[in-house]
Image: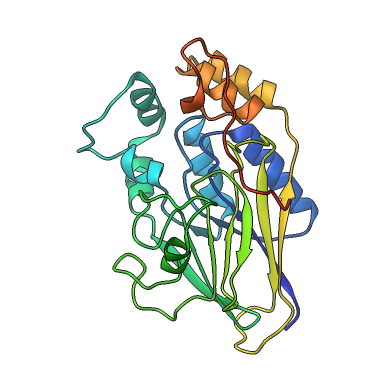
Length: 264
């Protein structure tokens, strides 16, 4: 069996324009396998179409924090934006999102790979690029959420919207895919390509590639405006400038977000 490529996308967040640009790039490269690491919805205006598109093209879909809490019928915290993003979705999509698996394990070129959204314990625990050693090692542990599969040697995740790649002295590899629809610092959508020989326990060539794909962010912002989506200033700050909406001052002057050294 020869080398195979798998595209990893994450954190589309309702940004259909960015998703289609990334899917076009994946298609031009002849890649047929796409795995999605979660957060299909929220922040952007077209979560319903993003969910339908990802169900159509992604071989693997896993749960993100927004996918879990936004449709949660017992969610206590609420805002105008959260109500809008939830009810832009169909009720059958609420059920599909909350029923997604926590992680996906597989073997590629002799490496045991695990993919999840945010951490090995819960989609609601964030591990940033400037983590400590304990947080790093915790990403490779089996937990109640991951189950008792083989211990991974390579872990990929999303959630933080900052792409990075790290290898420790024990040969464990941790990488973050970055975000397709809501990338921080550099707002250009980013995804990852894994290349290797599938399902072989033997060492073989293996690579992790980060790809940035330009798209028309102003067209995406106009789509949000035309649909009447709330929190437009925050969305503009994120998709045009890569500045997290929570980092805006009261007068809406942006203050810049700490970022990882981007290998893309």
